[in-house]
Image 1 (spheres, rainbow, N blue to C red):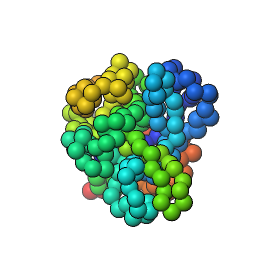
Image 2: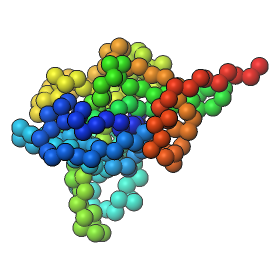
Image 3: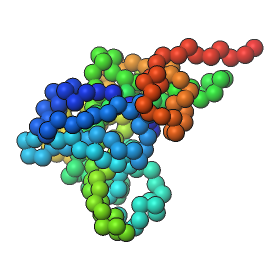
Amino acid sequence: MCGRFTRNYTWAEIAALYRLTAPTSNVQPNFNVCPTDQVDVVVRGGDERSLIPMRWGLVPGWWKKPLKEMRVATFNARSDTVATKPMFRESFHKRRCLMPVSGYYEWLGTPAGKQPFYFTRADGQTMTIAAIQDAWTNPETGERSRSCAMVIGEANKFVSEFHDRMPIILEAQNFEQWERGSVDEATALMKPAADGVLQAWPVSMKVNSSRTNGDDPRLIDRVELALSSA
């Protein structure tokens, strides 16, 4: 799964990557993005793409109860069930989108405690994760909001040393196939990234808390692993 990530890109970088046509946006860095936080999502409308803020944790449009009654985690959609699971099925068929991230965290159990590792692209570019989105109307307030989930699948050999799943990472040449392709064409993209795409290093255990302030760029600094005591 992917339960925490970072956003550390500029508007110019993502505008060029996704060929965004909307006016310049004030993109703020966040080194500890958590489920239910507001995240950046690239949505295709006709021949144009826009960057739209959404809740990370998909709420399907057919959900008629208050949000507090949704007791299932919907920030990750598994590639093997996204096309059939009721929470995600319609969004996968009709509303696929792109989620830009700078990197994400995974954890390993060590003698010193739960050790976070930071994964980012080895080429230093913004990572694009396959995602789905929907719009929902709050039955209590009438407010309409948009939300999303990132799609995760089987880990490649490199990531499997840390976790058995990883986000579905898209390359630029595959963006349109994910956004506009048939279900079969989108399904064909849901495979592990090549082993050389990502790199990882250990980071501060401050990341272990979702309450840690995301303004601190030192959260992604490499740290030395603590040695186990004899």
